[in-house]
Length: 441
Image (tube, rainbow, N blue to C red; front, side, top):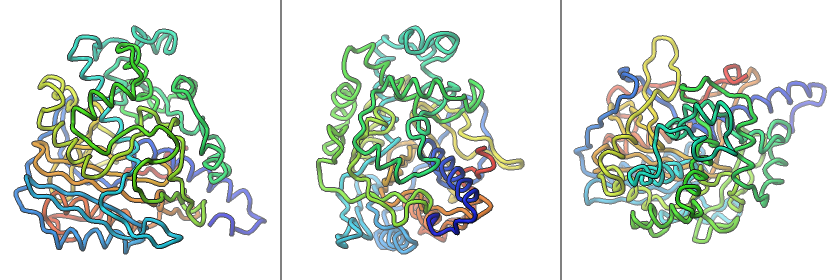
């Protein structure tokens, strides 16, 4: 897309790349899903969500998933559960060069959904008395987080992203601003130590004052290093033994190489049209994400995980209550209410059809995932898809209409509420959490 721009206007190309790089950073660290309006809640409040009472409408789920593909998504797979009922489906293409179709059971890079697993592991250590949520991180990692930050940033602030620590993504991939495709290609097999990522985040300019929610992967890489310090174990191994296996998940793991070990789709990155055609990054060294976003799973496993977590099978009541104690996830526009709140590796979101749901989303190069559940763990929906940063911006840097995102949101809303997409009560166009380039500068 950018490579077709006339050469007499290179400054516009540079400005556009800078804008989409900033937007890409935000989508990697907070996602880019639309949110609707909701009643305000006091700071630190928890949120209840009513259980869905309808049975699974398989025909509507099939039609809505197909609509996501028809809107422009290359391919998607999903799993939906209500009580003992389950539905799995797939739509579209897993490999654009061969036309290989999607399958519902494919393994998938789940990105920041990894954060929920890491948070569960930390909270297990809280229950065992080895970690204090309100203790300074400098008490545990004084050499890595010294000075004022070490004294003032608590473990809780890491887990709910109120630490004021910046993200390391752009410092780790600085060429994203000038040549995204080259930046991603150069990093494909680059091994990064978690300490290196933390130092990059700590050296970057803080995006928001301490105490204000500002999502950053650095927080969860630090959480992994904290786990290593208090357990004496590699954090990925600890999470595997004490969270993944405890949840009974059979296809969820930290990859040991740049390759996904099980059957999977190719995963295409567009970077807002600056990589054209979109390029496959399903083979990628995920050490750049670590305990913040490196895991692989299936949609069925994700539903099992959130069901067991929210029904109290992975944490004690006190720790689950801490996990669901939330802060506002964004600053609303004037006259709007907060419809998303972030806890400890878990958020709650209000859908246009009226329900509040718990879960997380994830985005890595080429792969997006979204998993949500009713608070009681009765009904879940998880979806994975294989084209990322499909959104487009106009020459003014503002986002253009997004039919793919609309179809994605419609699918998840219908899957969770039982109301087919397009007929949700009170549904209307809603603003996105993807900020404009002007807001990001």
